[in-house]
Each structure stands twice: as structure tokens, then as C-alpha cells.
Length: 234
Image (cartoon, rainbow, N blue to C red; front, side, top):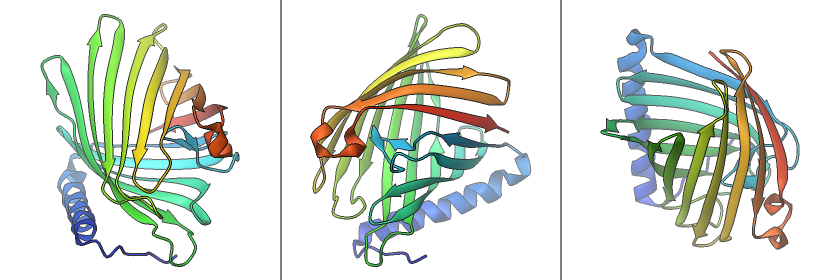
């Protein structure tokens, strides 16, 4: 596996800070045993409304350590995008406080698209902020995701998303989301999804969801698709 380092000094500094902070947080909370993780399989890997595994099933795994409102995580999932990339690795550090009726989740993510062709720009940073609150039985979430320099030819990129969800019993939740992608050097589009997630047991969960965009002419990744995902938490 060959990593392509960007000449952008801001990127190198951000990646280094993220790695150092994640290592420090993991070391600091390891003794507290606040550990969680999951493994899963889905009929397709979908991110920001687009297919990421070429229409094939995708495997994923994640692990997280937390201490109070702080957390650090690692995840990997199989993909089929970006000049031959076959795996996406993500290192995350975050802070998720609650202020009155609002919950926040502020995170920095370093992403690597492993298996990309030599010379492809396969590492990048994303910074994400979520704000959530409940209004009666409805849960609302606003998300802002920003990358100063994305993979490949994509430069600055934004993902803005609003989501609403409602519980359908003690183990089932229905959600709907609408998002917009705005990029410099990439495609702009609007995407949405709606579906349900059901806890089959305390550990196993099944999610069935329809994804679509307003830009089918841009290729198969932008077409509508029904995706099922089974996960087990530990």
C-alpha cells in the first residue's frame, strides 16, 4: 500500500495533530475500559448519498474508545472507487457534549483510500459538526461536513444535511434525510434517503433504506438504490 502525501502544509499539520490527539486519547482512556465496536455487512457501501462499492456488498468494522464527552475511533470498510481503491480507513477524534436540550458532536477525521493507483491523491481530512435535539417524538439533526482538500482532483468540499427521525416502537426507528454536496473540482448534487432501522436483539440491528440523488446523468453511483445493512455491536 502506497500513501500519497499532499504538499499542502495545512493538510500535513492537520493529519499529524489528529493522529497525535487520537493516540493520546486512546492511551488516556484505555484504562477506563469505555470501549465499543461493531462489524457489519451491507448490500452496498453508501456515503454522502453515493454508491461506494460498485454495486457489490461491503464489509465494515469499527472500534471506539471514549472518556466522558471525548472519543477516538478507527474504522474500515470495503469500497470500489477512486482509481482502484478497495478499502477506506478512517481515524476519528471527537467531542460530544450536551448543552441544554441540544446534543453536539464535533469531530475530525483522517481518511485513506487504500489500493488506489500510484500517484492518486488518496488521503484527506474531514471536519464534521452535528447538532441534534428532540421536538416531541421527532428527533432532528443538522450536519455540516467540510474537507479543505479532498481526494483526487476534489479540492474544498462541503456536505450539508438535515435529518428527522421518529421511533416506531421500542426497537424500530424511521428516518429521512436531505443533503447537498458542494465542491471545488468535483460534482455538486442533492441526495436524500429514507428508511428504517430495527434492533433485532440488543446486539444485532437491521437497516433498510432507499438512497437517491438528483444527478443520475453523472453515472451509476448517483442512481437510486435500495440498501440493506446488518450490524452487530459489542
